[in-house]
Image (cartoon, rainbow, N blue to C red; front, side, top):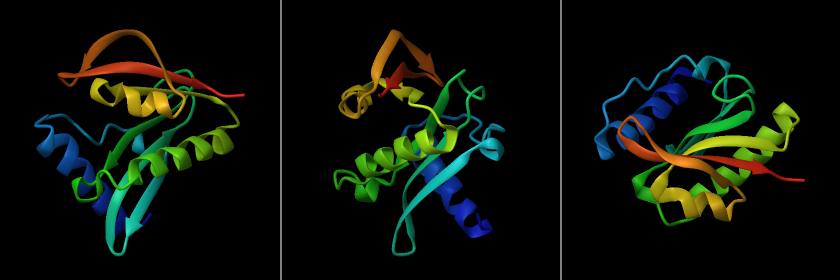
Length: 138
């Protein structure tokens, strides 16, 4: 990844997770250096991003995190396309069909429609309600 691409990733993550969601937290958490990154662009603009985490980093299973789409493209299908690519690449890269995520609660149906199932009770992560979710495709 180039310095410009990495700058765009951090800018988009900060725009949504820190500013829009009004959540002060340490975004670069050390997991980026062991992750694979999916960037989706429209022209020169980064419009969607996700990172793929190997098993043992966030969960014993492979996981997908920092899923974000630009407010400028919401409702246009970028998020769904991003997750479909992220799921396929996670399965290919790590040779597994089992993927765990920490999903913001308001996006539960979005992830359920992609095949994820909520596990356990709702919890707070950085003061935002989340559910652990798992996908086990065959």
